[in-house]
Amino acid sequence: MTPRAARVLIRLYPRAWRERYGAEFAALLEDSPGGIRTAANVLLSAVVERVFSTHGGTMHPQLKAWVDRAPWAIFAVAPLGLLTGAYFVCYFILSSGWRIFLPGASTPFVPVHGFATVYFGFGRLLYFSAPVLIGWGIALMAGRQQIKVVWPAIGVVLMALIGAMVQVHASRADNRAVGDVSIDIGVGASLNTFSYQLLHATIILTFAALPYLILRYQRGRSISA
Amino acid sequence: MRSTRDVAIEDDGAVGHYSDPPLLVLASLANGPKHGHAMIEDIATLCGTRLGPGTLYGALARLEQQGWIAPLPAEERRQPYRITAAGLRVLQARLSTLQRFATAGLERLEAR
Image 1: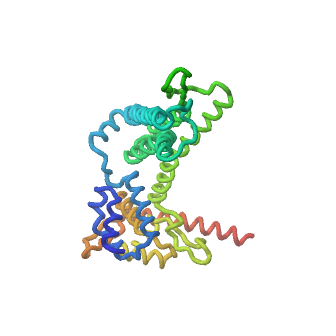
Image 2: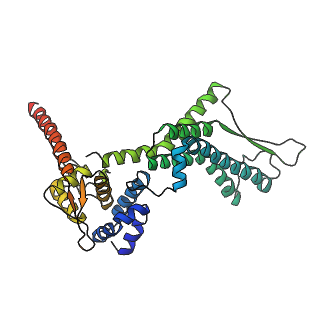
Image 3: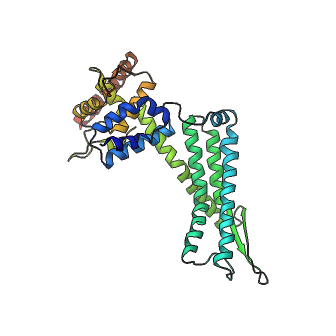
């Protein structure tokens, strides 16, 4: 492997780890044949090291203090704020996209073309992925701090429930030029809707927790001796 | 850290290869200090498993953190490691368990 490729791969590791092992690891990588397999191996190991750090991680001391002092704020209130922010962006995209790209339409949920596809697509992607991405963030912080799973678990479950219960409504009265978009949270009125929400929550929970569980399993194997 | 990706697959697949990176590193260091590249080659000879560099250093970092291995003075850019007394005890215990497991498993196979 070339020294440059080795340097790039080593940059994937946390600073504290690099300071301790960087030079010797670079020497080993330069002696290695390289290739995609080696790069993938280093990439996965770097992710594990970032989540389950052996050298204290790179978390900002102030954030670390907050995690120790008020885990409920970091793992429940802050994610709630982030998710609210993400849904606000979705709301903005949907309502502005409706006005810009579909001025005469009675609903924004119709097939669109050109740039409108990208515009609405980004909003849709954010809407569906936000609870999962925030769940990953919670899992990452929990793994790095190696704290008890209670508050991170509450945070991830909260994200899954809200992600499943949130509903978007769009309507336009006949005599109005501009339609109304609203986002609210509600439990399904019928058994069918409730079952769908439960399934949605389970899917979000699974996607949000899966990377953490896989990395925890990998870490578990690495200290099994 | 471990996955089947780290195992050198031959015609018989991964069957016959043992892979538990920390244990393999401890076993490799049991007959004397080694640096990373020497450990990879030694482990490949020992059991057919070729550890990826990331896997090796993941294991080394955690073994050092647990005090089961320790670094020696560097030789140019290469860093040799030695197994500690605690590491030897852990290795002994794990290998004894594996030996009992292997003996019991083989006896069951022979009884078939």
